[in-house]
Image (cartoon, rainbow, N blue to C red):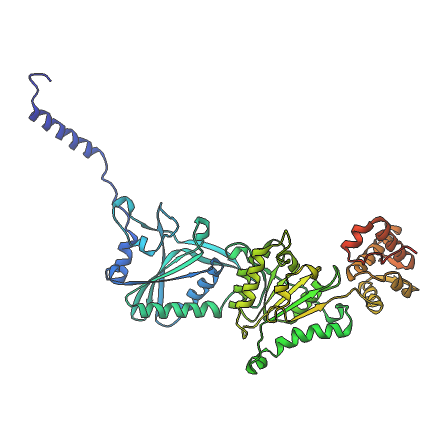
Length: 470
């Protein structure tokens, strides 16, 4: 260090340098108000002196919660402001308590935009739902803050959370109770035909089933009467049965060869049970047995339809049995109270594969109904049914009835379709409706048998060895 260095002079020069730099740099903007400041200002009380009441819902209930809030806030002397928040630390378990925490300036959670999720309703309209946000609620003489956080499954969380910050726990519980009531009363899923997906309201699909007339169900009359007695009549008299102390939870098993009419009959029954929620489980959503049953319990009266139930309910000693799903199904069927108005309709092409614990215990399956291959009378009716709309000029319908012994309903539908195609191909270029005659039916039958082979016959539900070309 030089001998002439003067620390006092250096310090004064450094101080002037800092003052000069500060004069050239604009002052920092004040930090935005924190959510804690906004909540404290709204409540006019330290939030630490209040209570938080928390409730969790399935994420599919996000639109139901939105509708409940909208209905709640239309009440007299009620109003609300909705605000959002900004944070870089939106982790699983993020809660209203997190929003109320401010340890350092860098950790301030500031006011920001409300995050919405658009959900499609059964009528095709869309509902904008608060997925991340707060309601500053004035409920008569009480102020409270409601925090909504949905979609936590994307971050390892568990669905939809509602938290209420209120001076009195009794008042918070009362508000929560009213919101639950409104969610149940205005549930968007009630009375519709649904399939469930893995998560979220957008994974729930609404279905519009075709109106199936009774005349389209080609079964022996006594069989159809029995099916209606065990389903439609049971539903119609459920209140009287409950009043008489009879259990109304019910399980039916439809079994029979492929193409015998099980699925069409189920569609017919669902169309007749208007106002009853129907939950369909088939294919890749078979694994949602527990969620579907809980859904049905919440939306009762309901129907749970499990097609091809043998896929999850094979005997447990089989090598490829889907054991866990079977246990879920058994637990859910046992867990429903006897006065819960839920009807289970299970179907299978292979009843011999089913686990005895499912089929041998009353209260799980109350009635097994076999769908046989159509007899001669039913085959005649099927030929007439699927011939509607065609120019059908068949002189010997009895011959075709005889030739199709041992086939399914699905086979006869395919037979008429192929005969129509053959007739249309003969008059290629014509705009007139094809005329289907005896020869076209015989050619179609030959094509299915000879060209389609055993696999096609199996797919169409033909009994082994039933058909020949003679």
